[in-house]
Image 1 (cartoon, rainbow, N blue to C red):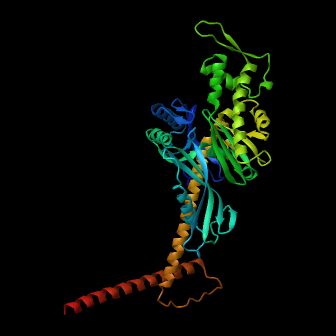
Image 2: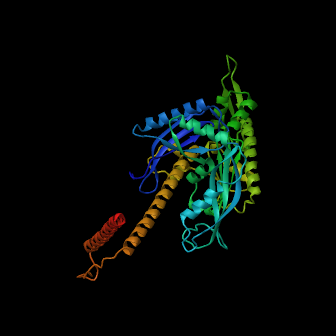
Image 3: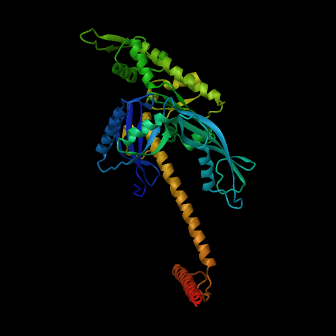
Length: 467
């Protein structure tokens, strides 16, 4: 394991569960899971925190279970997923005119371009969560994916801006902070899930990530390596459970159990002569539930969710011919039997289940390969992406500073050093280091001599002034 890599913790605050996963990348770039804990969620509905006290208890329980799996863990900061009805998105365009046109376009220019988008006018009750560049424009050149290193006067980009309700975001922050943690970053859940279940080929081919959670279904559409669209569909697994509860007259826990064990997303695949026996309440006789009727209820709600997916795809002009990678289903709701067939029938697009195991190292807990943990694994990957970008920026700044220092040192060189004659054509490492040491000492001596002369001149002028 790569001991130099930091430990990143993802915290998924969902409607039905709260999960905390700690991981670290190994030398092969795979995630070693160092800790895992989960707890039932009672204070969250449709992805929004409505009861802070219950949410805090659930977060603490998930953390305790995570510590129980690895007592050596120390968790202070977390990456948190965010979703809910309040999430919205918009497209913007931004440009800057560079003052130093002779210099190459740098990360500083890109950062300025992105930071300017945080000034975009949005409703007073909303807050910008993330600004995601799509395509860059340098002068008259368009559709540029990586402008750093290029030359140009004007740099612009198209942006996908994600916003959320201030109070909803504040409630998440309070819940996490009162649990004794600090939020490193809030990440839109479908983007985190996408990072866990997609590969580079998926980004290029064009895919739609459909993350079916407990309270909402989150959608993210990618095409030619660009995030084209995000949306939150206000239905999820919890709605299916409530439909079963009300339609069949059973308890919510019974409805959930039936959905998981006997549920079909396609009613035609359910057997007509199959029945489920439910224990009666308070001495009542047991109730028999038709598996076919159960499947009809599930299919009706899942078809409604897929109709929303089709609507959003049509809104952005992404018809079935453009999504060569198809639809990737993930989240807890994606485990319904025959959901792939229903999705393909409703949307006309090929579909598959997205598992987060591609990025996990061997030896992990089997449960973590389930789609319901895609968001949490994706949060860790997002944390590593930030870490690697920050490290790259620091290295670039170090090189620039070091290069500038060497240039100034050479410019200030006033002492003529005797020419070195190397015995071989190429000097040895020791000879080069010795010569550099002589140059630094000579430069330092020259600097001290100049300072000494200036001090003597200063006192001389003061003495002359007194006379």
